[in-house]
Image (cartoon, rainbow over all chains, first blue to last red):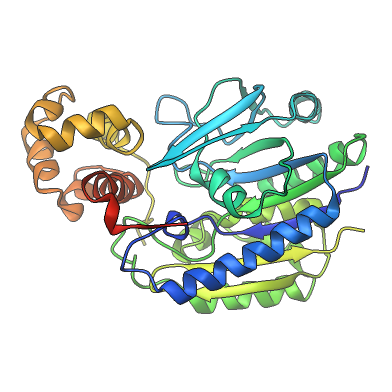
Length: 263
Length: 90
C-alpha cells in the first residue's frame, strides 16, 4: 500500500525538558508544529509509523556500530529523566523490512533488544496519534564515523519505499533529526542556519534527490550529520515538493518540521 | 578540516565507555553524583582522563579522545540528575 504520510521533525531533548537556557516561546512554537504533525498523522490513519532516526550512542555503543538497523522486538522502551516510554513494535512489518531489505542487498542489522533513543521518543511524545499505533524503529548511524554516505541513505530509502508499497499496512514514514546543530563541539552556539534555509528551499522546490549527492564531510561541516535520516526519507518520497511546517532557529539548533505529499 | 565528529580512538574506549554509562545508566550516574572517585574507579581510566573527567573539562576530554556528543549528553543528564527542578517538563 502506498505511504499515507511523510514527515521530518526534530527531537532535541530540551523540547521535552526545558532548562532556562532555552527560549520558552520558541519551544512552545515547536510544540505547536508538533501538534500539526500529530493531526496530520491522525488524519492519515496509519497502521504503523516507520520512524527513521539516528541513534545518539544509546542503542548502539562502540561494541557494535551498524550503518542501518531495524528493531524487531515486540516492544521498545526508553527513559529520560522522569519520562518512561514503551511503544509496541509492528513486528510483521519490521520483520518484512529486514528480510526484504537483505534480499535487496542492504545488509541490515536487526535487534530484538535495544534501548530506545530519544530521537525516537521525543517526536512520539508530541505527535503520536491517540490511540497509539505500533512503530518500526529504523536506525541510521549519524554520530559514529564512518557513517553511511548520503547516496547509500537515499538508496536505502528507495528500497524501503518499494518494500512498503508492497505491504498491506498503511504506513506513515517519519524522519527524526536536524537541522543544524553541533552538540558537544566548540561550534555548539553557532549553527549554520544559512545552510539549513538553502536546504529547505531545495526541498520545497522538489529537488530532494540532490541530497544524495552531498558528502559526509559537507554534512559534518554544516552541523547536519542527522540529515541522513531525512535523506533516507527522501529516497522514499522522491521529488515530491516539501511543505515547511516550521523552522525555528534557537541559539544552538535549527528546529525544522517538514511534510511531503505522498499520494 | 577536522571533522566535528571524528573516529573514536581505541585508546579512549574506557573514557567513552564511562561517559556512555553516565549518559545511559541511571544507577551508575547516581553513584557518580554521590561519589565520583569511587564511580571512576570502576572505569579503568588513566590519570589524564580521570583528571579531565573530574574537572568535566569538555576541551580536554575531547582532546583525549572523548566523543563530543557523549560529553555533551553525559553533562546534560548529570545536570538533570543533580537539579531536576531546573527543567520545565512538558
